[in-house]
Amino acid sequence: MKKKNLLVLLWLSLLLLFTPACQASNSVDGQTTSSSQISSENVSDSTSEEILSSGENIQDNSSYATGLDAFDLANVPAYSGSPYCEINGNCPFFTNEEMTAECFESYGELDSLGRCQTCIASIGTDLMPTEKRGNIGNVHPTGWHLVKYAGIDGNYLYNRCHLIGYQLTGENANTRNLITGTRYLNVDGMLTFENKTADYIESTGNHVMYRVTPIFEGDNLLASGVLMEAKSVEDSGAGLSFCVFCYNVQPGITIDYATGDSSGPEFTGSGSSNSGSSSSSSSNSSSGSSSSGSSSSKSAGSTYNSSGSSSSSASSGAVAAGSSPSSSYVLNTNTKKFHRPSCGSVSTIKDSNRQDYTGQRQDLINQGYEPCKKCNP
Image 1: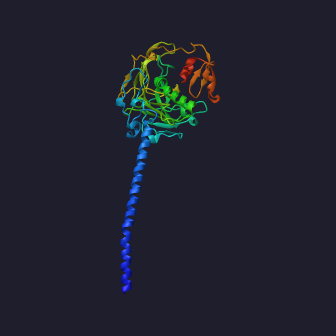
Image 2: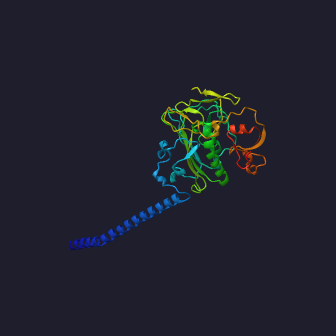
Image 3: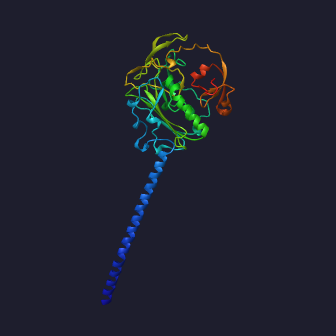
């Protein structure tokens, strides 16, 4: 019995002796874990700051939910003669998490009125088209009307405008990627930025995060304009970065954004002008299409008359068919530019993108092509 009591006392003594050591060990382990967590958090914060400060002066995009959550049409200045204006200091709203060099493309579901939504992509050379664009005349976006006016390049007021241009992702008759946009929006607004993006990707082989959002007011069927964002991935925007709003307007034409109806100088085919207007019915015919558009920032159901603009397209007369001589050009079907055959840039065009063309210069422009700025054909 005494031996059992002695064993119990000995066991209790040993237990009391080792308990503080265990507690101390747990305390040390806890401190080590806590210290490791703090160190990891500091590294993460440091890395984040480095990303945000590299390439360009950009605000911490973690404060933005993305795109439309930070954009307010009420803050966009009224159209005053320029086809676009810079938004957010020309800095896109992409978050760090959205930036990726892995190619993808996504086109938003049409809303209950059939209107296009945000389109986003990480664009690289492997997404760019290798064949000519097909016919898109069977697509009728909301607000579509087939109407001609004098003084408009090509005479058609509206184009089927690609939100993400065909030259970037090769999307053809994708109904989620086509809106009704004026010729002015298409050529003077959006195409400028699409060409910049395509040129950067082709010259560097890098990727570009690219997002285009049509801005509709209320239940309007015609977009007031489009928000275009782009940022080069590998160099954190040093090579390409923009955030602009392109107006869906046409100088000299009054537009009702609720329906797409319009009025202005009627095109007669001979260069003369008369008062005319579009009807509310759509047409199955295909007018020119491209990737840009413009609009006004008026309230739902309002009309916008941009006459008085300094743009020459408001007063220039229509060119009669066949009035200009035919010439030879070399086309880049990818960048949608045309060159003189003697232009130095012709040798850099890939065979798959090159096309020889003989015809009228204006016809190329009507098809969405842009003259090379080097050889000025």
